[in-house]
Structure formats: structure tokens, C-alpha cells
Amino acid sequence: MYFKSTFFEDYQLGEKRVTLGRTITETDFVVHAGHTGDFFPHHMDEEWCKTQPFGQRIAHGTMVLAIGVGLTASEINPEAFSKGYDRMRFVKPVHIGDTIHSEITISEKGDAKRPEMGTVTEHLEIINQRGEVVMVCDHLLLVKRKN
Image 1 (cartoon, rainbow, N blue to C red):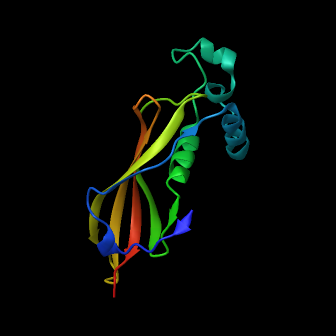
Image 2: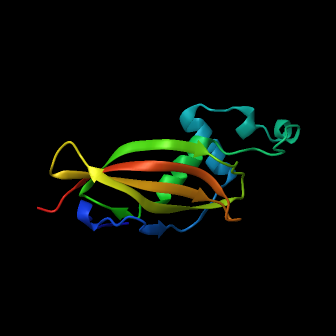
Image 3: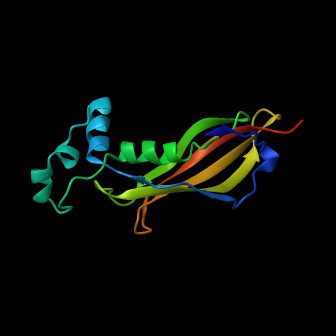
């Protein structure tokens, strides 16, 4: 992890970053359930899940989001501020033993209310070891312009 100043003008539409991978473990499931209070059987009851169409425990969607976003945090940009995430969708389930990585593409740029700032949208795709997109969302940034 390191600091890298990237101003609004430096972002290029279509520019892409790909992260390293991370294998999802049972410990991830247990820790996330403890943090959130989400102990639904879909995540925690292996035997019950065997009776369901998906056949095994599925990761909490919020956990996949948290890990996928965390993977992108290799660069700290002191010129940008996160405004949040839009259009989040859980496309496919993630299971214990799956390895995910994130791909970030600069998809939009625009003006902000404050003239010294601009808006940047990073389209985030979280992808499993089979190359399948498992989650998507748009990360909205407010970014300083060069003076």
C-alpha cells in the first residue's frame, strides 16, 4: 500500500487495474457473521445448504463487497474522496474455497458542484477463479483538479 496523487485530469476513460486474488475461507464466513450478526443458514449451516438448490454455503454479499473493495486499496489517493457505491449487484454466488480478484475500469468522468473538483466513476467487477463475474458496482469519487 502506498500514496499516489492522482488528480481528476490524470484519470483516463477505459483505464483498467487488476488486483491480486484472495481465496475465501470458512474463517471469513464466521468473522463476517460475527461482525454483522448475519447468521442466516445460507452462510452458516452446511447441512441445511446441502438440501438447497445451491448445494453449499454461499458467502455473504456484503462480505464479497468488502473483500473485493479491500483488494483495490493498494493505492491511497489523497486527492480523491469516496462518495459511495451505486448499482451494486450480486451476479453469482461465492463459496468457501473460491478465489476472487477485482478489476476496476474508469467508466465516467464529469464536473462536480465545486469547480475545483471533478467526479470519477470506477466500475468494479469482482471475478472468481473461473473468470465469472460474481459482483459488480460503481464506485463514485470526488477528485481534486490540478490548479
